Image (cartoon, rainbow over all chains, first blue to last red; front, side, top):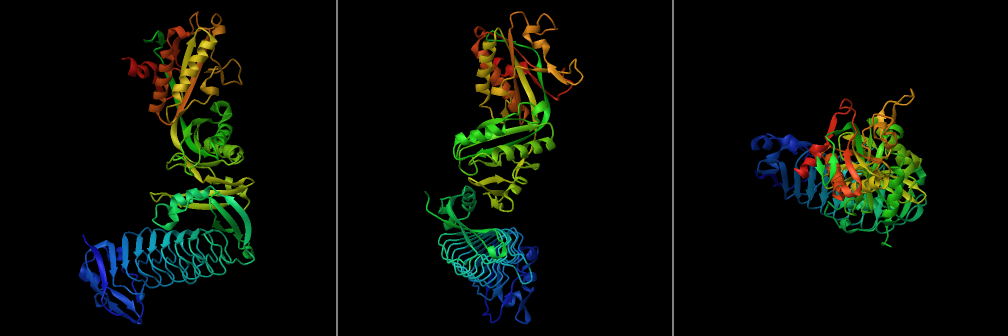
Amino acid sequence: MNALTFTLNKKLQFSLNCAVLNPANLANKSTSDIASMPLNYGNKQLRVDEIFEITGSDTENIHFKNTTNKLDYLGANMSSGRMTIEGDAGAYLAYNLKKAEIHCKGNTQAYAACNMVSGLLTIDGNTGDFLGGASAGLRKGMRGGTVIVKGNAGDRVGDQMRRGLILIEGNAGDYCASRMIAGTIGVLGKVGEYACFNMKRGTLLLTTLPSLHATIQDCGSHTLPFLNLMFKSIAQFKTKFSSIQTQRVQRFVGDAACHGNGEILLILPAQ
Amino acid sequence: MLINGVQIDDTFAEAFNMRGTRVIITAQNLKWAYHAANAMTGFATSVIGCGVEAGIERELSLEETPDGRPGLSILMFAMGSKVLMQQLETRMGQCILTCPTAAAFAGIESEDRINLGKNLRFFGDGYQTSKLFANANGMAKRYWRIPVMDGEFLCEETTGMVRAIGGGNFLILATSQPAALAAAEAAIEAMKRIPNVIMPFPGGVVRSGSKVGSKYKTMFASTNDAFCPTLKGATNTELSPEIESVMEIVIDGLNFEDIAEAMHVGIKAICDLGEASGVKRISAGNYGGKLGPHHFKLHEIMGKSTS
């Protein structure tokens, strides 16, 4: 079977909610059934075939082509299968993702991996603010799974993140790991101001030290054997993090302002 | 059956169902891994007095250990899951947590899990940190990082617990004590190469084989007088006049086949020494077949190589 492919053939002025276009909703539906499904567009609804050209039939392998950043909620609530986005994606990419894989070959807007539970999200380009964060009103963000960003990420990466792994090969913005509850964030590039603001637990793995606020405390340099396990675990993903071999880190703990026990691990050269 | 002048009795070893687990201990180097493993498997010769029977199974290569450091695998057996869990946690806390640079990981996978670091983490007094790492198969495992004075104690949350067999055994009957011990040492060297088994007694050898019951009401096991050479004239002995010493090797294992294989290679190593070594007979301990469901018949086990 060929991948079920949605090719955007309309220039979008408003955001289009694509949440229903996931394997569970599309399973056992004919092309005509899929074509007639309504999608929220601005303050009205459009049929799928008014926006996309539909080809293929494999609902467990979904492709989006010619995409723009107006396509919100791509891959939302996916609990099986694979999705490939050959272009940019809008906000809330991989919202509430469970046990599925999404590969976005372009850039994304804010709230990618919001409320993500498990699975794998790979973003080849840049992503916006609140990567791995929580949707409005929720007190816990990403609860599991792995997010790999090849480019840069915006502000508030991992805000209220509860569990899981976020790997950013580029830079991250301000307030990285803010209000983080647990999990691991790795950034190979630079990190903006106020990293680990109100961080409770979790790990922020860095290669360059940002300017830290006063409530993040230096705990010295250490060799931590658990890093070997972590890098082995990361090695299954094809990222630049796989090349890190050292277990030597400088450890910072905080945020003391909220009695936090989170940590920044600054990777040091091997001894 | 006669092998190289050594008589193999037509009898069987009687073994029991147990619960077993495997733990991987790593450290900065093998020396400290052994310190940790020796402490953890100390005073673990018999469930009768120690609660568990435990031993070092083998050394592990750097590729075999989860954290890529030198390590050892430990097998531990008990009569029930509750005792095994209790003993494992106690020994982890007193022997591995305390040992410099040591870390502990699950060595066996099963649906039944018992705690390794799950409760030990509270030693961290709130500074402990958990990490969930997925392996290449996507299976996530939780590890605990507990701050200690030498750095961090790393410990997997749980390990597997499986059904196992304890009490496989054979007896070495020789014309002198040195001859019996030399034969036992040769057997242990060969048996150490078999996976999934341990010989839990000191050096792998027992000199105080027991029988069920005693003339004293408070004792439920007592010396196996039928195999005591100094009682040959005073009891219903199993020994011929020339036998002066008997040693026993007890084997616990994760399955019947590996225990049988360990018995096979052990007895073969003794028989290879020949009659001139002073070993006259190989026998086995049993309770008439009424207590233990697993019977290791010596002739069947040794028939693999002699027939």
